[in-house]
Image 1 (cartoon, rainbow, N blue to C red):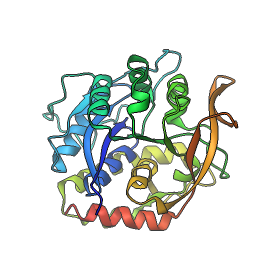
Image 2 (tube, one colour):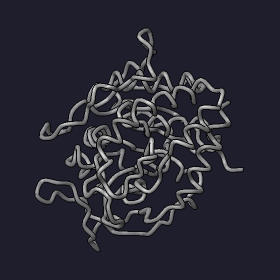
Image 3 (cartoon, one colour):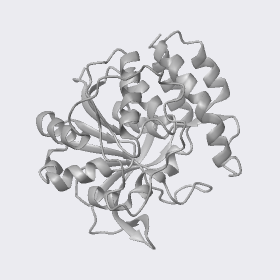
Length: 307
């Protein structure tokens, strides 16, 4: 068996519940050796406390967690903040011990020392600032996997994807840098959902971490429904779209998705983030389809191991 994959996870955990579910999947997967978690966007200290609580519940209080960039790099955009962040996960007395260093510095130090795989499941602000601060990071990142972008591969999927659109300038820095990158876009992740029946299955898992994830889903599900229930592709039985867990799972088993090699240029078009095919652009491994049923079954089985 190959050694576990060293991983640094960069996340905006706390708003959409999929980041928390992704952390749960990481902790349930022996194929992954989590080395650090960095948080981005808005109240990054609160996000870091959420990550710290989930790691403690999952038996990994040793993993360093650092708070990072609060605002888009050029301050020309704004991050999403709903005010429910932490509900279902944090208790009033959950302070947690965070790394004293800034997330950008933890990212630079961890990548330079350990050469981990970096998975970004939030806006790319931390990574962009890290690259601008230390350009040697471009060659030090063994591989980058990003949940982000919308390529127009699937009907009825929103044309703009939040992670890359919310700090488009940061995304330009990172995705045009030439780092070996796997891209898991919204076109694919939109097809992967956790439904009421599957949440009921998770409720039977006697794990503090899984029970906490269920509580967080209960907070998120009505908010998500209010955003998307008018869209034809949204199933009202859906309690969470599994954007970030699917992205993490590509490190464990790439057969959940079909990949194509595409040369894509990250650009601003009418001030919005877009990918444009360009023969001179960096080449990405792009997920273009997914076996959603098999992936959801896999994730449930992994989370059940935490009992």
